[in-house]
Image (tube, rainbow, N blue to C red):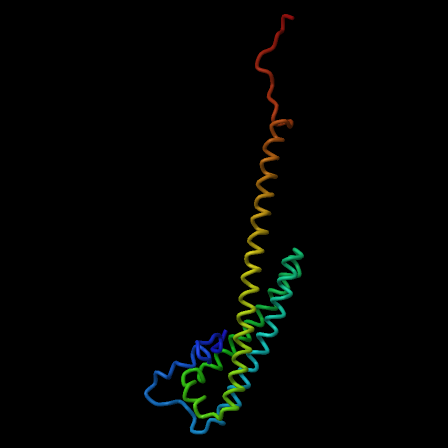
Length: 178
C-alpha cells in the first residue's frame, strides 16, 4: 500500500532510512520544491486509508450480521480503494529513495507536520490490519460451522435413505406353502 506503510523505531516510515542506490542524489536543491507534492500524496494516502478504515468497519458489521450480498458489495468498494492506494504508493516511491536527505532539509515545524501525517497513516494501517485479522478469523469460524452443518445433513440423508423406498430390498425367500 505504498511507501508510507510502516515506521521504524525512532520515527519515520520504513523507507525513511533507505537512501538511493543511484550514484547521484535525487534530492532537489530546495526542499520546498518537493514538500508540497510529497505532503499532498501522503494526505491522499491518509484519506484513502480513512475510506478503507470505514469500509473495514462496515465489512466487520456485515460479517457479524451474516449479510453476504452486502459484504460482497463492500469488498468490491475496498478493491477499488486499494487500487487507488497502490497508485498513490507508486507516486510516493521517488520520495522514498532519499527520504532522510529530503526531510533533513526541512524546518522543525515542517518535519513535525510530516511526522504527524505519517503517524496518522501508521495508526490507520494498524487498525485496518487488526480488524481484517479479526474478520478473517470470524469468517473462518462461520465456514467451519457451515461445513459441520453440511456434514450433519449429509449423515442424516444417509441414515434416512436406509429407511426410504430405495433402502428396502425384496424378500429373498418366500413361504409359498403356507
